[in-house]
Image (tube, rainbow, N blue to C red; front, side, top):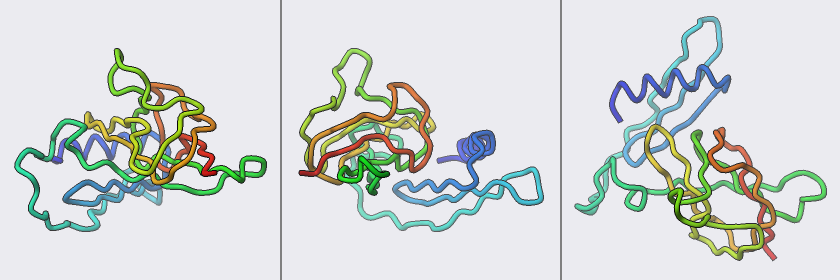
Length: 162
């Protein structure tokens, strides 16, 4: 990630109204906090992670299949859906249900999934990130429309783990 991409991310976060955004990539983590007394967002680079020996075919700006997918978070949603697990967006970006416009959706309501299955793709700064399931079960509800912007920690899917 170069300085121009970081600056664009800061502008995007400032316009979105989010108070804090954390971005974790293979080799670094960034936290962007907005608000406070000034009109400019504060940027903090949290940690530079040493690169482990990576395969030669996986450069940092690789195709979606070669990039490290961000883990999906899970939490119990409200009241009547309390028996379901919510899979949330691990990053901000644009949500896509299909790998490309001419392909079928990764999952539909009623699809049985297992841990590690790709559920959707989120595009962030021209990088497509596969979002994999952290749980096994059946898709009960898809909470986001295709090609919609999503925020960090926004619920994407409801999964029945039984």
